[in-house]
Length: 452
Image (tube, rainbow, N blue to C red; front, side):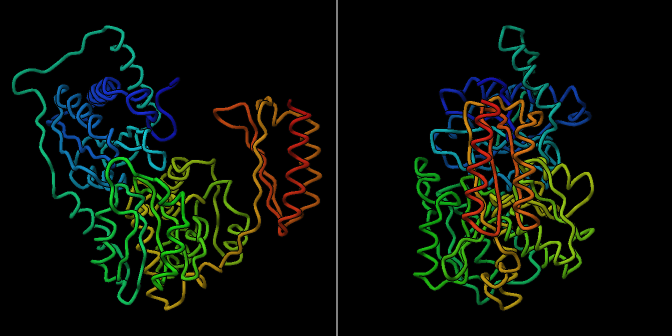
């Protein structure tokens, strides 16, 4: 698998890349690294462990729990819950560590392990590197220092976690959802129980699809990566809006009453204005990535809000938010972080707040989302090129400059070398789709000739 930790934990095909042995070893390593860092000093350590419904999560959870307990960590098993719920409970219960088993929007055969530090925040890169190093050292033969007798960790189920999380979600809403009809697509994933319950407690009339997980059907033709079922259901049931989650419910995409998609950029725009209205948008600033649609940037400028852009990845959005105490950030894919109420993207919270804005204003989601116009965006992947020369090629720089002159202030060019493959991503936005396609095609040809 190369380096084990990626931008969002350790992920791979369960029982092939991500084995029980790896899950157990990483858990023991995490316990030792955090102990050495002083996290457990002066008290008996506790970890919260949750998972999504994938079949492989059952044996991987057992391996993680065994590893932590063998290292002297008491374990609270919260069962099938969303990633943001595990993060929340890690903080709310004062746990020293949280572990989530999920591969998010990936297909069922995959799974992953994500660690949270005390407070429910993602582990720092340096801690992940240490865990990986310690795991590798002991995998090749160095013995562990193991507790015995009363020093081993104790394991118990914490069944109250779901209710505690739902109460947290409904408790932070600015207004109730009475009179709102919503269709929820749960992707047969981790939020199949808690998301409908939260919407119902908040007063909404709820229709659910994709809410019957059997361990094998997660993300299968449903959820935030497959919106057609949700679009049809919203129209069929005459709903005010639809909300789609991914497998671990850390993201949210929406559908308006006409069955039209409302993406992460539009959701951010709607929530930004709502938060400013109730003085919750600190510094009148939103954080998003460089892949956000230019229409979002133009809308924020028109509304007098500042936009800070980061590299692609919700962890970079979160780092920027934490460093400068911003309240709202997210990605076009639907990862939305409301930092006052969550330490990671929370799809259920995002959906609730979006529905709350519809209820509070009496306006349709289509009308609210029209605050920004999505400009046509064309993305071309150019394979088998030297991605390292994107910033140094004079031929490419000249082609980009010419494209930017042609597009003017209503268009944008972005070239991104892939972090994992020998390819370059060419992204072009323009007011006209044909123009965007034409410019993107020409730039892709230059990338091939200049870097091939």
